[in-house]
Image 1: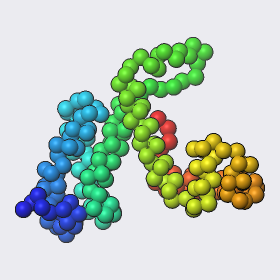
Image 2: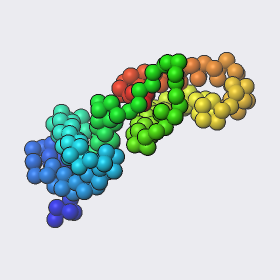
Image 3: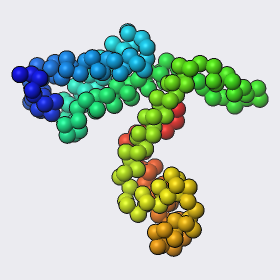
Image 4: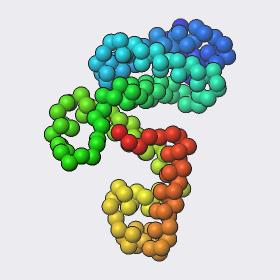
Length: 193
């Protein structure tokens, strides 16, 4: 019977005070979430800590009535754990720090595959966050941004493709960047790895 209840129904029941619903959700997704976390940190104790921290965040979010993922419970939980994994690496200072010095050595940055994997994880999160917030831009700004950044088109080419003047294309790009900065602040997105 428990297997037939959708995640979204269990979330609603938990918010309404049914503690058992959360237990069912945790048991249902335990293996997949634990495997995901372990694949990133390669440490059982750290995996357990991050798993627990993930559900502490889930509980706090649900109790505050801030959950609005509309039936996408598992991807939401995975994203929380993904962010906690990144926090773990940042706090443990296992990411390489880049310092400007005269004896800069490129090979010192490439020596540890785990560090590269961690940096890749952070890059993936930044890319994902940017893809999500870019979609919130007005259509005209999004169009110019995609042509300029992703298609590497000149403003003259953008002007010809959109049927607007170069100045209008420049203005739309400027507003796109301003709005992106606001969205980055709004969602507290960290763009450095």
